[in-house]
Amino acid sequence: MKKIFIFPLILLTAIYCRAQKSAPAKTDEGIKPVGIIKNLTDSALLDVVQRQTFRYFWDFGHPVSGLARERSNVAYDYGNEVVTTGGSGFGIMAMIVATDRKWITRDQADDRMLKILRFLSKADSFHGVFPHWMNGETGKVIPFGRKDDGADLVETSYLFEGLLCARQYYNADNDKEGEIRGRIQGLWADIEWSWFTRDGRDNLYWHWSPNNGWAMNFAIRGFNECLITYVLAESGTRYPVPASIYHNGWAQSNFFINGKTFYGYKLPLGFDYGGPLFFSQYSFMGLDPKGLKDEYADYWEQNTNHTLINRAYCIANPKKFKGYGENCWGLTASDNYEGYNAHSPTNDLGVITPTAALSAFPYTPQYSMQVLRHLYYDLGDKMWGQYGFYDAFSESHNWYGRSYLAIDQGPIVAMIENYRTGLLWKLFMSCPEVKGGLKKMGFESPQIN
Image (cartoon, rainbow, N blue to C red; front, side):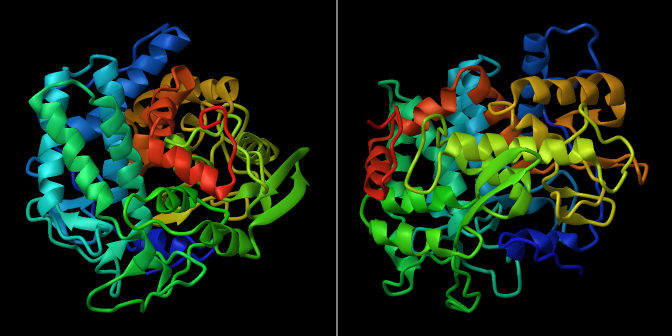
C-alpha cells in the first residue's frame, strides 16, 4: 500500500491507495439516468448536474441506514455495507437541496431523515463521536485503519455540519419534523468535544479508540479541511472547549500562516499553493466565508485565492499534462490511475477531479462554469454517468475513472447551491450555537454580528 503524507489529512485518506476491486453501482428506484442534453442554459445545466449528482445519495443510499455508501465500487474487500460518516453529512446537505428544489417531496425527505437518525441513535459511538466508517446494516464500526477503530472527530464534524442544517431546515410543526429536530439535538448534545483535548491540552485530537486509546496521537492543526471541527467544538452544547484551543492549537502549526504570493494571488494561510481544493470546500459547505474574518485571515480571500492559484497552476501546466487548461483544471483528493491520492500543485499526477472546480462555484463561478461545460459537452459520456460526473480522469494516462465517492459528490450539490441561493450557508449560520462559537473564537461575519 502506497501512502502519501504530503498533508496532515493524508493520514486518513491515503489508506485508499490500496488497489481496489471495482463493482458496478446498483441503481434503486428514483430519478432515471439521463444522457447528455444539448444546448442547455447555464442555469438549466446546473439543475441537471445537481439533480443527477444527488441520486448518489438518494438512489444509492444504504437501504437499512439511509446513510451514504463510501463509494460506488467495493473498497477494501468490505463489501457493500460500508457507509461513511462525513460523506453522509454531505449527503444530508444534498437532500436538503433536493427537498427545497422539490426533486423529492418533503414527506419523502422526512422519512429518509428519520431512517438515518433512528439508525445513528443506535450505532456505535464513542463519547458521542462516530467512527469514520460503519456497517450500514448493523451500525458497528468498520476499521478505517489498524488502530482507527473508534471515534473520528473530523468525520463526525462533517456529519453534524449537515445535521445542524437539517435541524434548521426541517422546521414544520408536525410529529415527523419534531422528531427530526429532537433526535438531532440529542445527538448534538451528546458529543463530548472536551474529551478530545486529551485531558485539557491545547489541541483537539482526531481519533480515540476503546481498544487503542490515543495511540494515533494526531493533533488537529491548521490550515486544512478541519476548521469546521474547531468551530463545532467551540459551539458545543454540553461539552464545549475554550477559545484557547483554537488559538493555541489550530493556529500554531508551522503550516498555518503563509502570506506568500503565487501566480499573482496572495495566500493568507496554509501550504504553498494552497494544497488540494477540498481545504476550501469541506468546512465551508455550511460555514459561510463571505465576510468571515478573524485575526488570521479573511476567509473569502483565502478560499477564492486558493482556487485561483490552483487554476493558474493548471493553466501554466509546468509538467505538460495533456488536457490541462482554462476549461480543464481542479486538483484535489480523488481516485486516480494508481489508486487514491491528494492531488495539488505540489503533488500533481496529471489527474483532474470534477468536484474540485465544481465545488468552487461560489468562488470562481465563471471559471467553474467553463469546466462544467467542458466536462459535460466535450468529454460527455467519458465522464457523465448515473450519479453525475465520475470521480476523476487523466488524459495523459488515457484513464477515465468509473467510481463515485460520497465525499466528492456531496460538495458538488451543496456548493453549487450555495453559489445559487446560499441555502446551506443561511441554515448553518442561523444556528445559535454556531453564532456563539464563532464569536467566542473572535470571528466576525455579517451573519453573526
